[in-house]
Length: 185
Image (cartoon, rainbow, N blue to C red; front, top):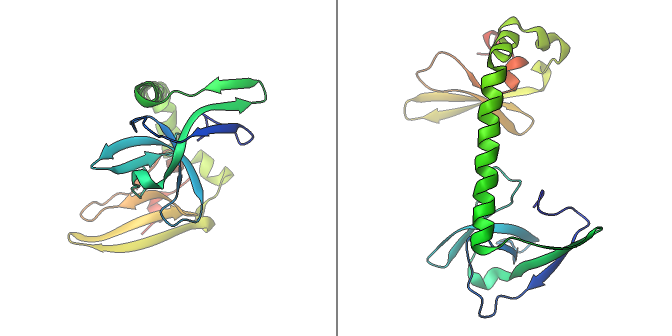
């Protein structure tokens, strides 16, 4: 749950009791596989199926949980500097979307400012010699209804795709700076 919490923060967990479960609450629950306890924020509630997401995770969790899985909600937390309240419910929801909107705005601004230098660096290939990634790349092939899709992986991260019917790779930023697409299949 970084940036909300750090690893040494102490969380004060309160059972829900009569309190209504709300989108934006930070909850503590048993993971569906029961192998660990998870602290994430509620992002949606639909027919008692609750979807969660860690604040620092790019995606919503794959599982849904029910109210019975929830151990409690985080009322406040203790840091080395003292006790802090946590935004929950509607305040947490507003905070979550403000952070998301600000991050998107900063990203758009950065893209517009650095677009020309980035494109120049990716076309010249200057950084490919400095940071060679070729030996660590893997390509996976998937049969799709429209043809074969190729995915380019660096470790376990998908950094590019060649979609059926297209003749050029779509490489995610910033990896485009370090990969020679002409050497890919």
